[in-house]
Length: 313
Image (tube, rainbow, N blue to C red; front, side, top):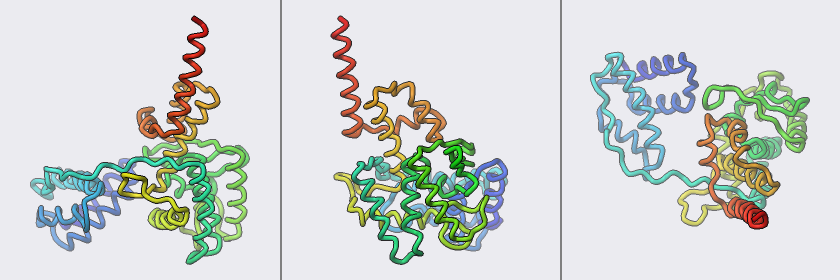
């Protein structure tokens, strides 16, 4: 059976089980193009290693490719298309995962101001629309892919709530928003209406036509905005902060605000996990790296607790 046919069969099966398999599907199609028109049993271990290694130095993408291809070959073996998997069993030493970055309030302002740079080479409405996207990601902590899949019908400004459908874990959740973000989205929808695109299921973020912004384009625009904002690689980090770090920032800033206002943070963490769309609180806890702000807020809380305890005794 040809490589591309096995890939198509595998994707059909996975999607029939309720999995979107969007990024994995793109990766598998790239694998199919790299292997060419040949039966899957003729794909050599050396060809697979070349695909895994790619060009340049090894990155965490190697492990992602290996994981996706493992699923493909497990399927191929179970269907009798190949006798065994030619994937390497020994994984190379990969660089550590990028440390989550927490933007300061000043850096967030600079990012928002730097969206003006997108006026060059893009349609006139892109800077304001991209600014709205950044505010949405920070204001809700949602994943970039979730924001890009939003449609007009998902934004209910009468109730100040956004419906996030088909999330990473194939669930739908309601995300309440504050009045400032609601006002920003209202202005965005007004600008958006000038594009004369049919309502309802039309994408929330779109420039022309009826197709919404794609993830690679949004990432490319963010790199321009980040550089214009003067935000570079942190000391000791090989890569600069990412768009996804707005999600980390939203979580950390929320916990800092809770500490400073005297809230019961441990009681509220499960609510934050639900808000972010995590399966359990452990995923949320990984977001809460001890930044100077968070450490200071926690220290102040402990100091108040200790002083109160001493006073009682």
